[in-house]
Image (cartoon, rainbow, N blue to C red; front, side):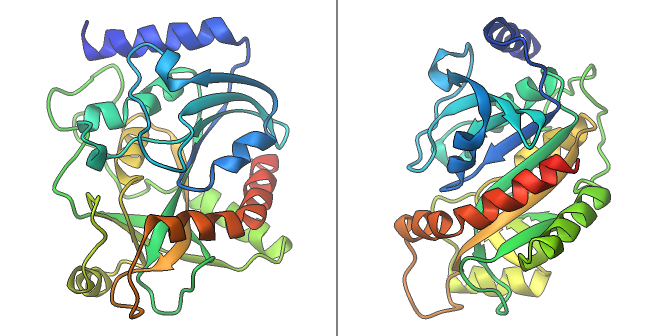
Length: 272
């Protein structure tokens, strides 16, 4: 079975489970999956039950789709994503994004836990992504182009939708939630970046670093989907503070800010 046929098979399976037609997709990053519990009238489908889907292997990622209503919008949320460092090739990493786009979403809100590079940031900050740097040398569009999904060469200038960024900043102001804004830089992981790599990232203009998001944004842009990106700054990147990094701290900080994060996303959805 070829890649397009696998996408179509997964879409058919999900459509058999729900009559809802979601217009907005959500990717919930490490420690941020609790937003999925706020979805009303949910249909929950575990990744392991969906034909051709990979399986989440990272702590803090539940590994299921939730389809329902949030902020009075029909949404489909990924509670857990896939990463290149897990050993999946990039076409598998982005496979679920291809599927949820095939279900009819027009907008995608992608979230992640990230390390702060900008020294004015602090753990617990939320950063609106206005651009990214792909530092991995990898690209999910490498290989034969899927002509029925998008063009061979993709303009990434407006990958992060300016209107959605403006909306998020406006909502943040109304809710008295201080939002940062900046550039997200993708490293492959699973090692955290070295102090020298973080210094390089800062020199290149990055505000935060992480191990996800960019492949998903590339394929969403390939298919003409509007994207809003939000990073939760769960720790300061290596070398910014003289302390070791660990995944437990990432989850712990994500849980500390979950109320603020959920309130922001729900209000953004209500105004989309």
